[in-house]
Length: 174
Image 1: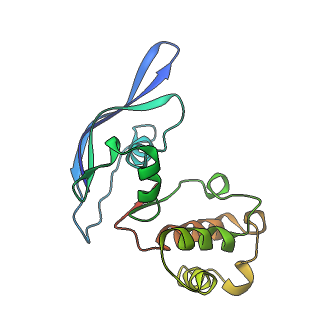
Image 2: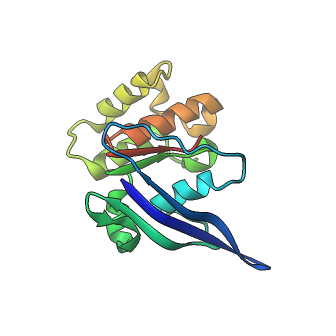
């Protein structure tokens, strides 16, 4: 993934707030990259910009995000939905708001597997992922709802879901 001069603004009452200001970096296959800074400096907004999951008042104001020769910022939303989860996944900062409260955690992981792979046994793969991230009793936890798990367990579910189809880029927000 190559990011060049990425800029994101947020519309506020006083005008525009520049949340991301010309950020550039390149991430090669197999590399781990950390974006470090103080609270409020734009790390999460950078991650959300890469995924094109910005809040309504925010928008990318410039730059390029290239993955395999394709500028993700120029893709139509339907094409970007195919990229999210399959080629680029994200572990969100707050699993309580990222997980759907009316679906079991297993159903949510299995949905990602079904949508982005040809896996014949999504339940078995999801249980294996829950085991791999250290969730105790993964067969039983597969049928649990997010509210039935601790915060740490919900975080492990998010990690399992993000890894479900072995994305090219994994973004972890904290």
